[in-house]
Amino acid sequence: MMDPAAVQRFHEDGFVLMPPGFLPDETVASLASAVPALLRQDGPERVMERDGVTVRSVYGVHRKGDVFPGAVRHPALLGAARRILGDEVYVHQSKVNIKAAFAGDQWDWHQDYIYWLQDDGIERPDMVNVAVFLDEVTEFNGPLTFIPGSHRHGVLAATGRDGMPLGYEDAPGWVSTLTADEKFLVNADVITEMAGLGGMVSPKGPAGSVLFFHPNLLHASVRNMSPGRRAMAIFVYNAMSNAPRKVENPRPAFLAEPDVRALVPRTADLIGEPR
Image 1: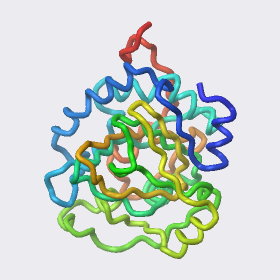
Image 2: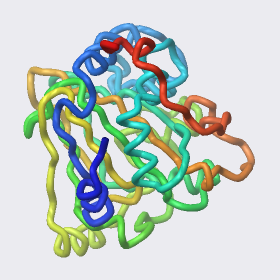
Image 3: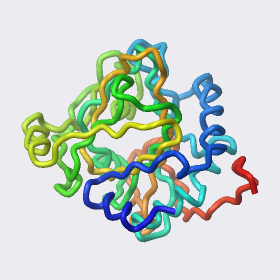
Image 4: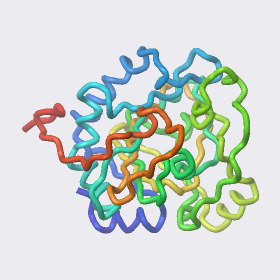
């Protein structure tokens, strides 16, 4: 379980990286082995890079099969999310982000919460992103870069841009929130100011590392320059007391979970671990 010191680091810095072993190796291996099949499944939840060939993300993975639904209910992840948020939780969104060798594109500077506030009706940032490294994350394959402490300044995003990003002109409107050209950009002067206060850091580590980060933490990532893949499974837990209000034109269920029920821990024999 996540200890109080780690929870405190999360609240102070906006993130905390747990080393391999926080999740059992068997669970990480099961998640990694499920990725190739996910990438082959065509559908609206699979988002491609601008080249139209390379998979960028697959959304709604906590709704698919047994492996990912079991992982989001693993006692280590679920227990940590409960401790951080001080509440029962459910998964509002989940995805596998892929940065393919040489082809994985960037993510511009942004905050996640603005999307869930504006598009999904979630009124407070009482949420936590949990990223499970399915490959080693290095300085060469597009690690996440954070500005520590920036989450404490609230929503910093500029007004959302109009229109669709280049290469996605014929896609549904909600796709504009998922591409390399962020809909809600943060102005460069704000990034400069925040970096001057908190610096910048890119958490890196072997496969099996687990990264917890706040939805208002400023973050970005560069393209993958390496010959190796960088894959992460990301689960977004929301506090039950922060359940979304009804919105007009809600996003698809694979982007905004409509079934808001508190998760309960899943037993070991259902998630591929030793009893």
